[in-house]
Length: 437
Image (tube, rainbow, N blue to C red; front, side, top):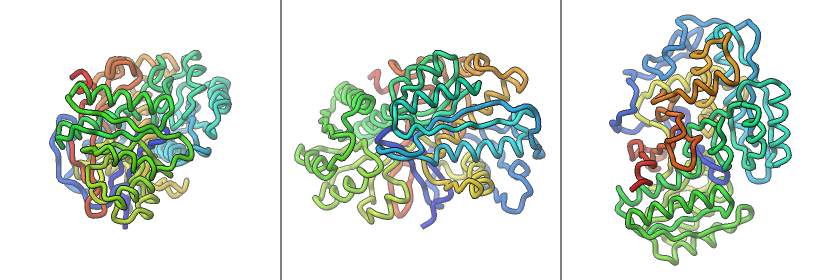
């Protein structure tokens, strides 16, 4: 099975969204945010550069040169903080995606008006002390921005905030990542996934009794309770089933959910929790819609679960419209620069890639000689319906989702696993409006 063509990202701590889609594409789902589509997929394999064969209509068309040019000026220092290794999951693909994007920017896009990006990386290793240490390293290295990855503890975010260093994108999994004044997120994180699943279950599937299986840990529990509140507002009956964050026997909790006779099950799990969740549901004949995070559709999990994945629904946070120009460009860049860093295009790396490209677009808007921490923060705060690479347009006014001011675009899409691939089954879901009732 191949998984190169469409990739959909998103989600959290124990629910990292890492979806790899097959070469087949879903039928178009019209919505106001769809970009102008290319008529055919562009093959850059025979081109000397990506920019010479880049598809028309990408969200960064305005900053793509006609011919490639390598940046040779003084560097602009950007950092990335991510959990590359750790007991609660390892997500090195996010850091590697940053490297791929930066290589493309520096070698073909002339960097930021001639200034190459110098990327410094730091691994938190699922350690709150190292999270803080990483932030201090960014301060000492004079980074003008930090690209977020997954930092479960997020203890260093306050240090970044106190020093005016903006945190750009990633997968927000801590309270500070969605509430810091200088954090700008292009994902709904755990919160967006939980509410988006509930919205689709009630409004589209017309299911009312929803069981939510979730890790009993600060931000994840908060997301489950946010969904619980929204479900009640819309006349549904939420059933919350908490699990330990580490070492949970997911089969036990799937059985517990089944015993409540739900109309649908929302499983906020990822990594090691995906396989037992999917297999147990099949073994006990749980014949109701089962909705999971995109992480559970990752290739390594698919290989283990067999046909138990068929018909399952996943959150995406991406537009899988056929031949989406951003998707085509992402594929081309990944194919050209990915092998250098051993990067696999399918997976959650799309989230970091998106953040890097969105940051690059802002840096170009500011101007290479005027880039500072303050100018970046000001530029993001001024955005309104700004195009987001392979995502929903974003507005960073702090008002997109009440209580989570760093979320610039919490909107969700959902997909269903059909015949070996993810098929998009929803347009963009405005979860903020749905939460308001």
